Image 1 (tube, rainbow, N blue to C red):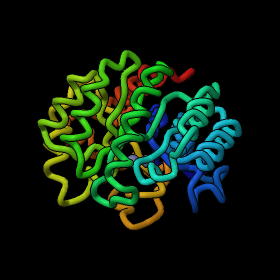
Image 2: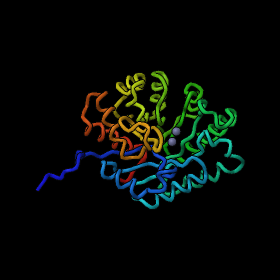
Image 3: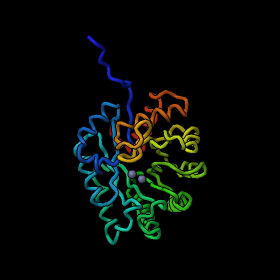
Image 4: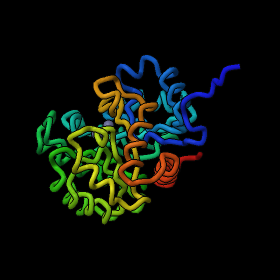
Length: 268
Ligand SMILES: [Zn+2]
Ligand SMILES: [Zn+2]
């Protein structure tokens, strides 16, 4: 008999804390995507709905798979659509038993797909929604860390905690997020050659505040950069975080999984 052991550490348990399984192309093949995730050691995925229709799609996937959970909220790109009573509708969607967080909400002054003034008002309103729901808040900030953190600090404290996902800020931004009691979620960009600043932040983060994510289908880590990202690829990000912090892959997997379980109250 040949040795048919698969190339993975059997004890590995990873959580993808931020994914978009409900977006193309992953939505077309979610069963296979989740099979590959399980084979890679991923025990839970949080899929993030970014407008009302996308939130419904995310909930449907969360209802289909025991180990998929959802977060819902108007992404800053979609802030222009969050008119009138629609934020209340999102709040109602967030009452679904598989919704473990509110968001992603924030400011994106890199792509500016919604006018900045609308992004600000929708972000502020949703910060209050997250706080009232008493669920962790998922924050998206791009080219807007200083102003975004100012806005969060004005609404703080957030007793249910939160996470700045796909962290791309500087050391001061990281310190402010930690002071808020938030976690930082590290994406596949940490494997990119030019990400020295992110790597130096990852090195010094308190172990109980680190999460890892794919943000799939975007931002596939090296050596899969440029391909469609999916939860199974998170092992490459975990391996790089482990290398930076000079701990084993198993240890970083266990720490980040425990952090995700605690923050999101995952029933694992
Ligand atoms: Zn985001
Ligand atoms: Zn996202």
